[in-house]
Image (cartoon, rainbow, N blue to C red):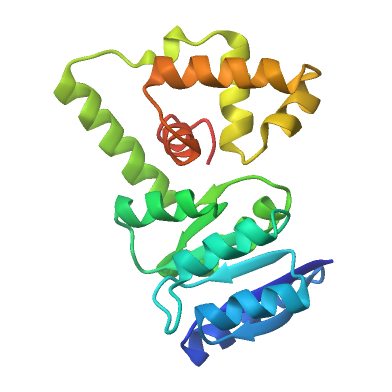
Length: 214
């Protein structure tokens, strides 16, 4: 059973989200929070598998609340459900450690798939978000007149790039590939240098832009 906490300051949104999720036999909505601080406290008390979180909430905004939840409960997946499709919000969300980012306008179609993906420790983004990132990346490459450095990656570096983008830690990636965490860290550093990436959020953004993950 996938246990879900919903955090949004609008009751009608919480009700609609609950109704959508509870149509799935293996989903259970264990609570609703009206603000970010309540979401952090209820996460600790209810131990959900997934937290579906709005950004703009009183007392503590969704991005800061998400960061606290991820820091304290690394096994809990956070999905941002927002009206904002600007890249700045997505970067901040990824830096906070969220695994999913959905637009409210497409939640009716995307939310169930997002919960299932994040519950499996995979990332998930609204198709509109992913397409925006791909188009922006293409424009940047054309403007700079440079080739994509992805072709410089070795087969192993590409494997590790995808695993890290899906949200796996160095240790988890090492288990999947049957290598040591030190080996993963070495390849991680190499691929980040080749692609001019500086943190996990940028790894995820790059992977979405390249359609390595959806």
